Length: 513
Image (cartoon, rainbow, N blue to C red; front, side, top):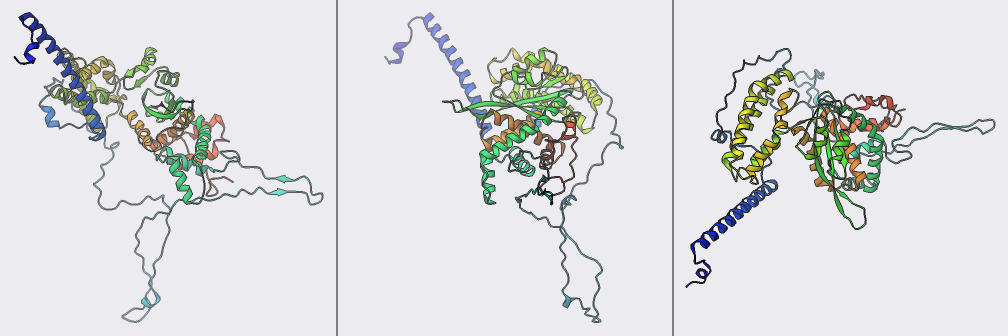
């Protein structure tokens, strides 16, 4: 008798019981293996795969049932008076910006070559042939020597008078507003950490330590905080606010500790309040958004269904979901359940198709709302019925089960964008505002302290808002840092990025006479 046969039960009932136990063990192990394979595929895709979530549309047609949609009247053609003419496809080199300074270099014909070969007379100029060449002039550091003239009485050589000191961003500090703006933009807009800037300045022969520049940034952020506070007040007047968050590593100076995890939240206003404001918090508790949105009395909040927003929604702020988040969960479930995952992706793709048509026809909020009611609502109703039917057929903890559960649990929030045309189908705008932090993390690695996180939030709020509004961040910060210390607080709105107008400067250092 073989050794393994000796362990088999002798009676039929015991054998059946053992088979059932082995089958249950096998089922649990298969479920565990499927979950681990799903996690491995996600990690491999995040590490080595494509970041996009594109799926072949022809493949989706295999899984997509027909959806009954009520016929709609054809959309009116766009008004020619308000629709910009399409630009012809560009060919060749684009013209250089007219605002760039130009230096004229004249190439003349030598004197010996001006004689006419026919009659021998001297040829006269009749015009010129010009072309533009783009050149780069490296950045430079200059030293501004502030001389305060003194006067005294010639008769008694007493009663000395001296010119007043101009206001400075940092009282008796070394950096001018241009240098502060350059360091801030380099780090918080271009993701160049301070230790690299330290090396760049060394090539100019100037020793500026990273700790010194860090103190400068903290001082600049303190000056600019009233502007960010005014931007926050404007955001809280929005009809809809988008938000998202991301972790950042922060040095913990408590003895025995090393690195802790802080959190940077982003808040986006609507078209009437087009600002991007970041808020640093030492953790991810709901206290952060609750404190920031304390003055938000009514409106919509679009987010990723994080439970920390529940207290905000409980006091009347309407939750708007994100279909990009829902779609991502089905996309991650393609390997374990391709039929259901691709079917769900196809349903969601039709919702985005409606949004593409609205954008193509340049519909306003009212037109977008009408289009969604006629086309998106039937799609959502059919999709909701499909989700309810499939939920009973899948394992709740499987990837497809979790994707279906996420959509069903957040169905009211995911359907909320149908209520108004100014609402968006997803929260991608907030996710895009978070991306600069993810890029910066790979370069500056961590914040030096909680105070450093607050400094980053303040300066990133201004640089990001400038970029989204088409304002040059360096020019803005250089001018505002030069003015903010003497600017009346009652007129702080004049310094907001959407209202800012540069002051006239009398010298290259940005100081006004």
